[in-house]
Length: 116
Image 1 (tube, rainbow, N blue to C red):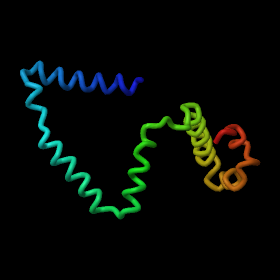
Image 2 (image 1 turned 180 degrees about the horizontal axis):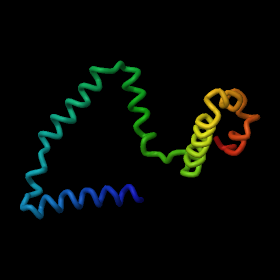
Image 3 (image 1 turned 135 degrees about the vertical axis):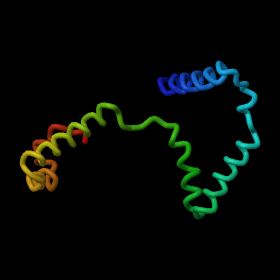
Image 4 (image 1 turned 90 degrees about the horizontal axis):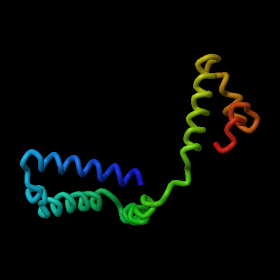
């Protein structure tokens, strides 16, 4: 919902500001340019990739519109874990991380973040 609101604010301010300076919205509508730019992009994509990559990309496009399986709290846990690991390496040296990295199930740091 916030993404949609953000897009509306951006479009409203850009086009509103353009109209406030005396611009006409009809001047911005250039379908021939859209065909040229879009066609060149699609053509370059086809030329630069093999059939398998193109099919894979087309299959992946619907995935862009699905919700992520990761939540904000998972990202926050990951950042906190990374912070603790970096703080330990800064205080005790990089070799102090070896035990934690080699055996994360036995590590006190990793035990604090079971979802990661």
